[in-house]
Length: 525
Image 1 (spheres, rainbow, N blue to C red):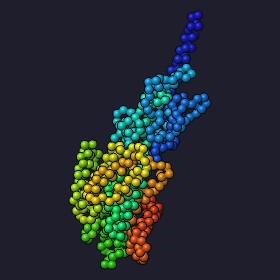
Image 2 (cartoon, one colour; image 1 turned 90 degrees about the vertical axis):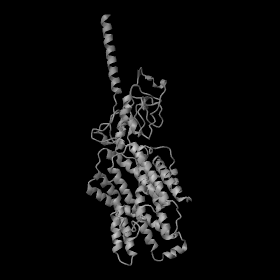
Image 3 (cartoon, rainbow, N blue to C red; image 1 turned 60 degrees about the vertical axis):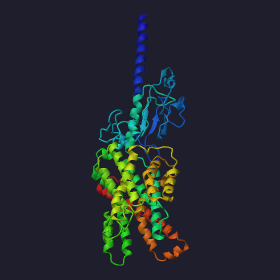
Image 4 (cartoon, rainbow, N blue to C red; image 1 turned 180 degrees about the vertical axis):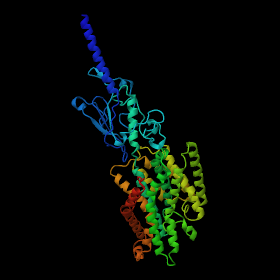
């Protein structure tokens, strides 16, 4: 009897030991990073998630429990923004469900992610986490996953329908690994690309009207430049803030921006200079000096009684864009209080120059005084774009795609009586709000290629349209075309500018940027 009791106790002890070992193994987080698939929204890379049959955790479209042989299959579904299994759970749901006489305690989550994460250590869930290879989290200031705001905060319950007990650390490490993966894959804002293309077309229409018809039909279309400044501040902060905070050198930043901006500045100044020289009959010395100065972003036109960049007038905004980039990269990151003070002072300065120049139409390029006022003009929209990123206002929401794409031209093309007041309100309130709307919008899959192409076309169109419009204006027999309809020459000029911009991207901009990238030994922005 005693021997039987000892044997029974021994078998029971062995069973309990095996059960404890299996339970401990299940509670360990088996996170492995393999190949890279899946998306978080359009253009944002993120891993897929596969769940083993050991858990009740189901990540898929249906979310229902699987039984029998089908339950043992792996289910895979892309992570889309807010994961379906993150959420609250009632007390009743938090109790472990028993099946086959034992509770299911843990999940084995497999991240199918990017290979770059294999040799990285995810950031700590508490304290200031920095990867062991020296890379900082997104934005350069994220200390925990919950603080980043990029992904939902970890929860003690994986699923409101099929909760898992004692897995508090699983989601922490899960989100940290996803955050590390996403760090190397910046989100692409396709709606903002489309809005940038629309703004470039509006500027081209403004100059076509002024050159070929006279007068001004598009009363506030020149504020598209302020939209460019605000958009640039947001994009630069989004792309470089974390890298600058983690030790990126100014020389590297300058190389990347040079590769991105200068090729089209050079070809725009050269084409505009050739048109300027062809139209002069009193010598080529002055146009040549102006063209060389324009290539170097020097406002040489002021020395000859002209506007800042007469060979290609839109280059004036690129001068202030470069200045804003340099100041942003060289200045240390301001605290919230000082940055807020800068934003407030720049807004007051913007209102002041609106009243001093009766609007912003000539600010930045017309005279020396307006050129000096251009520094105030660029400060507020650029700082507002940086603030949009730092405040996290760009995270995805359910904004319809058509809303920002229609609101931008409606805002810039509708005439308003009071020039100074309207310009101040549009630039200080409406344009930053449009950038926020565009950043929060995820376009439909069918629109994505068009928006991407439109955004790529915007920069060369902005710099090449004025020389091409001058060629069309001075073309022989253009009066015959104008006699058919007064708007036909400007429309023809804009179409030719769009075609020339597409050709310039293909045969000039991409090859030159690739060559500069290889020569400088860095990856272009």
